[in-house]
Length: 360
Image (tube, rainbow, N blue to C red; front, top):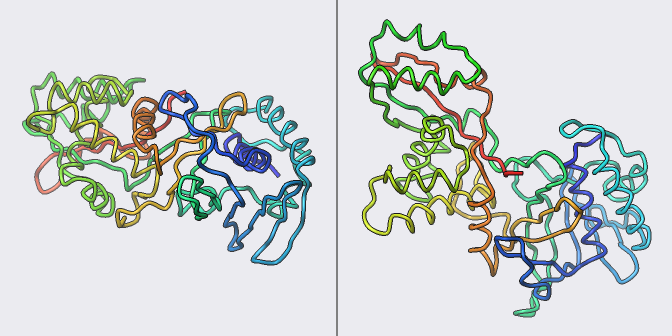
């Protein structure tokens, strides 16, 4: 069996939680602020239409498959596997591709019959914890997303046909379309925009191609499609991908034409957007505004430490972390036809595609 570093990291996070049930909650600078509120009593994982439950006891883990006892593993074994796994992840032969870790075969068979830990791709949550909340003395099921720093930076929003944004080009001579579309330099998107700028044309955000994505953005705010569209365009015009820096540019230009308290508004609304795509919103599905990742993010740090950005009591820190630690990525311009000028109803348009990734 072969998995990439992110997938192996999900197994590592599971093993670490088995041995250290108290969650270490951190602030937006990854400084620990709380390690006594939450204790993990058990973990649920949905995989291949089966539900696995890991009941964490003092000395071992009881593993149930669809409510039937499947296997058992001691915490002493867990510690041994965990140390081997971390060494193999850090020493993996490829930073991007999949690779085997033969020593993990037996434990994966015990845990999930050889399947990776990741739950369905149709859900944002990677695991569900049975969580004891010591503040209010309750036990609840809470969903978490796992993000790893052990390999390539994780994506927060994947590029797809649902993340295409459409722009109208006003004042361009039709004879120039072929010239623009033939620009195929290494920095072709920036060069095509510069060509349009030299021609003194107007570029205006038009719409979000996907009806579901447009709906989902408007669930956050009615102006959100335009705000995201304008920031995406800015990222190419200014050759800048860092989200915090792009927000500062957007505030100075007031691209969404808001009144007073611009800085508060832009950071709040874009933060709400990042929170939505982290905790529940999927571009290709109509979103009802609720989150299925109710607990937040489990971070696997570069030395194997497990930290939690909590969405229950410390949501502000989670949002600030997302703003400071994400960037716009550059998906395949060929696959998504980015900045290819085309005609539609005698008007000219081009598309840009949105993808968001964590910074290294």
